[in-house]
Length: 78
Image (cartoon, helix red, strand yellow):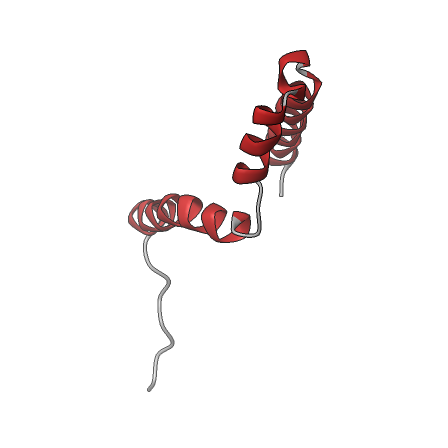
């Protein structure tokens, strides 16, 4: 990986952590209703939901990469 990819990943991770911290620091989010909403968003189905949301993007990225870079060439069987 080159430095630009690593920097982009670091920025994405930082923004994700920052947004999560802002959500938990909100003074209005200490109510019982906010606790119920957070419990509904982050529950035992979170990995499944995350996979269902990200899988279409990964598939589209794979198709676009295959179109742009071409499919890998197979071995010659001669």
